[in-house]
Image (cartoon, rainbow, N blue to C red; front, side):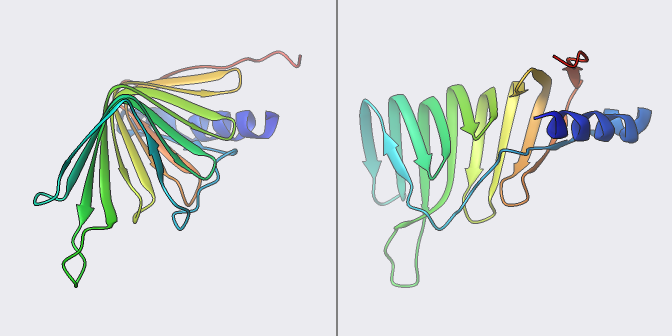
Length: 166
């Protein structure tokens, strides 16, 4: 954990003034992600629009893929159309209504999020709060590269560090 905090401090210090306005690079040390794993969704309700290639899950929605968890009040899944015309592959998911994300030791909250399993990205927007142990970072947009285990926080970034050795 101290390595993650040290790398986070180093990244923030190295970024300097102008870079902080553009975004702050973040190392997500506990992140593990495998897009080949199946996606499991649980919710209170489900409505499907086959023609549009969409499924809408509402009420205590939790999406799980390996150790990754994405929760929200509502998640819309948009399916890609295959060459044969079937819609089975997930193009992207749009989460809204109190979004939470957890993977390993990293956790984040936001108002909305878009998950693209093919690209391995999660973009969280609106009052984003990222927690890494005792360290917290907030901003308006967090873009996470799940494969690389990195992220960029943008929009009036604010962080709090624990400096004691305890």
